[in-house]
Length: 111
Length: 113
Image (cartoon, chains in turn red, purple):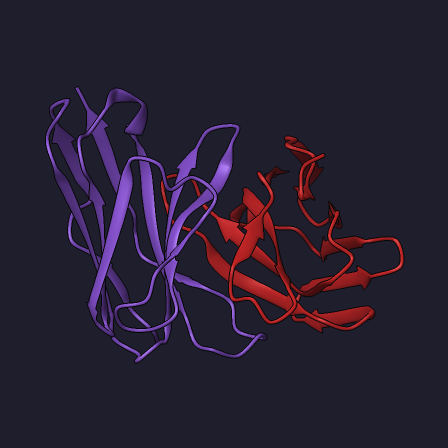
């Protein structure tokens, strides 16, 4: 079992819709959770961080964490073609600085 | 903004060569990391460092070594390059707090022929 699992996609959504990206993790001791966006040919950039159960909102982005289900998600409201990218889920366990990445979900927003 | 600079965007090396990849960050971060990224395999951690002269093996350290003589610089060394080390190499840094994510460099696309 992979430590951090994501559906590779592609996930296609029409412009203006809500895109929902999901991630599960295996280490129950995980404490910090991140979402990175990676455009084709570019390096990942951090877009969201969450560490407590529930929702965290930042503009059009909402991260959701459910530690009991070992599940973290990213919602993108009013999706735009510029949101088309690969989204990487990343998990940090406890006090360790090492982060484990999922393989990413490719999102395509159709104009 | 934190800036992480990787010395080369593209490199082509021959099998058996010793290859040095350099990474410099300008925000006094304690932690630095080297990943490689391959299609279908995602980001895999090679080595990381949480302090000057300190290093820890990641998930795939074989065939690699690292050096961190100064806080701002973290070097990845391919002792004897092989074709299976053809990949995108990404350097990242972060501060010591658990809520801080990584800042990545722009990456080095290494091709070993």
